[in-house]
Image (tube, rainbow, N blue to C red):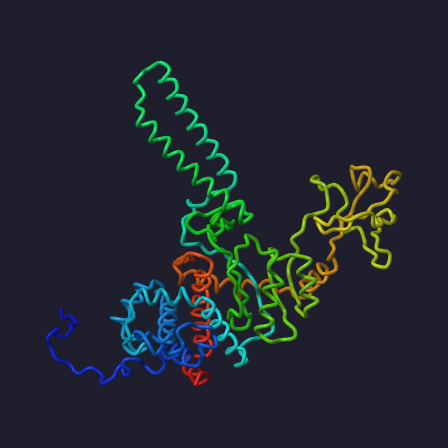
Length: 471
């Protein structure tokens, strides 16, 4: 049986005459090179864009940006691993023209240019928009990404109080043991061991006090000791996650991310309008349609979207106005009459505006006729029936009507916005950041989104066509 054998290591061979011969004309690294060369990094806010007369020459920021984009495209995010790629990877040698910066230089570039990296991500979206690759419908969603810090480093307000009480009890117990031993002049208790334990407890008590001060200063109910800006958040399948809530707006035609934000918000219901507004500004359009799930249901934000020319389709996420037994009339049977600002009940009586709740953002309607109503047992078990109407009820109704007319909206939303998150998390190693702190996390996320958009556009348009457009 014969085998395929390699060439002897000592045999002389003729390699290609130049590095350019190693890289095919339709290779993705050529797209990275063409895109970065088309940017004005000084205008985008990068440091080191001006040549210094004095001192040791520095690496051009264009070279380091190309290296990072290549790394995030190929799931190589560590600065030490990128340093090794510069020394052994022919594609990287071609891209950087054989430059081989050390890991510290590479890491410092990402740390110092977070704002610039976000602008590069935005510049690519603007390029796609100018190429008429983006439509007027987008989908917004959020996903929890894990921080570099461990969840074990988080202390909550309730945990803090319990631990401080436990430490105080232990300290009191040790002091009582010492006092009892001294009064009886016994030597069964080793004073040096007790004093060491007391010192350790005192240090722990001081650390807990610092945690308490940090929580009070931030107005938060939790604190992460090794990454204070990370938050403990609920995450469906994982229970809870220490990390950040990443928001993305994805264009539904080609599944490109047109805008993203790294937030510390545990929920999505206050983020619909800010994300839609920024996407509308990036696309430069007068009208925009936004699809979102029920987690974004907010009457105030739906109204603000309507006022700003943004058509939002969001399923309602609201409590049912009924008793737990379900034996009373649903709120839907009460018909609202805008001209009267009143609800007509099944018995034909008018429930008029009585009061409002600023906390819950609702108007409350009722009538005195409930006392003598023959349908009262079917309506309420209280002395009268109350019906609530949200301050922005009309906005909820408009959104619900749009969903009734467009049955496929939520299917398009899911098909558009879920896949990018899955792809980015896979590229990042199950969605965990390498860097600590909000500014560094934003830089990482910008690179991840840029890498996703580049790869997506190369698949949609083709590398040769994309190179022609970048030329």
